[in-house]
Length: 338
Image (cartoon, rainbow, N blue to C red; front, top):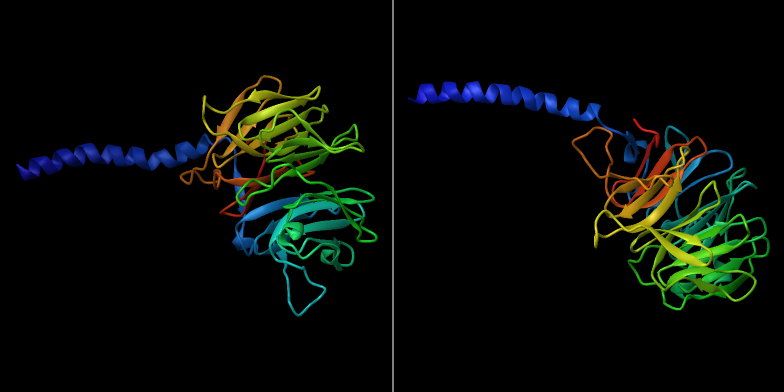
């Protein structure tokens, strides 16, 4: 009886195991996108990425809680704070990055305000002396670099920093204070010259007149102006368009009531928008049709999405999509597909 049962199990299990062996290659063959991790094996010293930028020379910069990293296509070069070196970064916890054409990289930090890195000489200039001693004034959340000034969003509010003199002027303090754990605000200057400030207290336009809220007071976390000049907004409840002084809902999530906290928006060369829906992976949104495709973490697939929690996204000048994850570092892939 036992021999008969064993023979029967062998007859059933062998075909099942053969099918299981084929499952992984078959699944990998239908993968839509391939993402390569650019992490500790390339020299990334810490895996919580808060900012990614590309400088005017083409290098990719990755800011983490453990330092600033320059990626040259092969390895990272790391910049950190050295208490015995006044020419080093003022703080290793990097929270924001912004590049301009001079070529200069601006670095926002968790506790020591802003630093400027000259990409030609490697010289670092610190601007922490221009701020009060309060942590709220020194904790940087977002940066926007322009020709004559740098806009610095801190926990206490929005500053205009004169790059040449180091003079700092408080421009605006949102009506609701930033709370730890909230997504960082974002800054954007559109083609018409308007300065936009997305915060947990809502979306504000900061012009020569008094800053004004646009739409209601619901949270605004991410901003992007596409190649057609349309302004897109991500918040607590999905994707919106900013049009005629209003916030117009476009995509409210995968299902009614489902969380859709959009922390980052970028546009790929094919015109589609990529959204970081924290902590539920990525969505690819087609503005022409409204179609949405979901990408989620899947470790069973080689080259699959490495995690579901992305703080920042970047499309570089070559059209590649960079992902800044909360737990597993940086990754890059082709937004056109595998």
